[in-house]
Length: 312
Image (cartoon, rainbow, N blue to C red; front, side):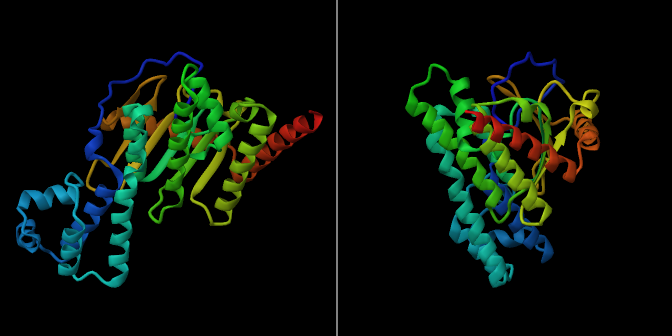
């Protein structure tokens, strides 16, 4: 979703930035699991606080994902709630994921704060709906395709800086293979298939990757639904900027819209404005080609780039 923009951004509705440190992925998910277990047993915060020798406010922060959870506290609470082995394994997975979330902190020196915040939000989302009109969404980019975009966005950067930003972009893709991975609906403007980012070989590889993801989704083996918004049907409903809608399943904000610009990003959180962007995405989804036609469009584009490679 991070990309080089070749247009002037249209005026945006008023927006509100979310506090990044309180909306990171794993602590939110872990806190929600503990909260649900407590509520299922009809226990109050005051009743469970002594289990981990904590205050009511600490338990509350833990359940909201605002307080870094200690493994011992999590397991003590889980045992108190009568968690079965399967639930304990799930909590262990979230604890590991919590530590894994720090993987991108090593790239802090080459990563803008708005992108770091998005990575945490992606990890906490249960559904991500995104529309892109210029480039393939970041979560779906191949390494070669992403490198072209990073180099274009950072023309004066040293090679090692480019490499580190590239590793960050590639690391984000691991989200699609986590046990608690979100559902992803990617609406791609048809122009993305025509725009030869990096040349025929890079595009052939990138579109082949998208084609494989789309086929795996059709077979129930993938959680990424890719659909193409054709020129003829999308002209009247396509916005001038990319739009990403994230839906959460825990105790934080239920949903928000992410709008990335050249060197910043906005997070739309007001319900009326979120609803407006949700409607935009719904119209795009209605206009987009169905799964079979999207596959045909990808196949045709792949064949064009294959022919271009053969022609040398």
